[in-house]
Image (tube, rainbow, N blue to C red; front, side, top):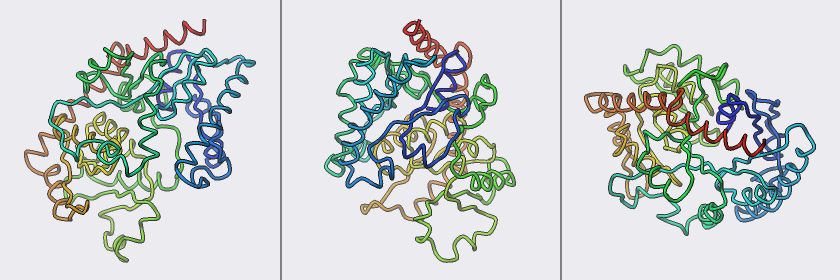
Length: 384
């Protein structure tokens, strides 16, 4: 959202990103970030965020109640400033935000991620909420409810580009006003038209960022010899590693709890990206020309992995056992397939094609550039 805001600012709009009160207080981010102003609404748990809620259902219920009320109050507050709100871009999992926007007569757009299909699907390829809706009933309801009022949205904004998903976009455009405005990757890595746009602007782990970026610069381009690697692993998971694991790796690997992903991928040192295939990670890898080993877990990750392997030919997917675990031999097979031999070279050629098309899409006159111009023109017409 921050990078999307920067694109809007470059076209003469003012952009403000809303977070929760708890996140705002926890991060102590100074406003603005890269020109994007920051403000906050309540999720009903200002003192502790999601961890303070009794359950997922409790959190989502309070988020809707408190979020609707405080968002409405915030819009009203801005009416008395030189910068009244004229448009709201909201996350699709917050459909109540659209209702608030329309109550205030605002232009509203909905950013979504929509894959297009050209191959047969197996049960493992569909989103987890479709394959097993009973597993997370609150999340399933949230996924379904995002479509409850989309007919009211003035635009549906998609973080993709036409050349990547033309079949899906053409089909969607017949039923709703879609605009592909991606990839929302910092401009320096694509069209380089926005000054000083070289990062997302929010670094929560500055020390780890310095460690990871310094380490990667010592490695050869594309790192296909001996395969040194960076492994980002949560602090809570570190205890599962063998006691001497990190020490035994020496300088052949770096284990951190966070790293600036897009900066690492764009470093020119990375030959393969082992990823769960969340959409942001997937489109960043495609936009930066990095082949992937896909190890999806849930939500939209399985269909994204299907696209990576069978549609975009940009990587290979890990096959898991019946217990859901992946054996070491399988991980080795996937990594060797990407990093070695003709198959890996074909994947590299494929992702390089998608990278070039991503650059063209956001460059002047490109498909996403034109979509952004259309969106901005509409917002300006509402505010004039």
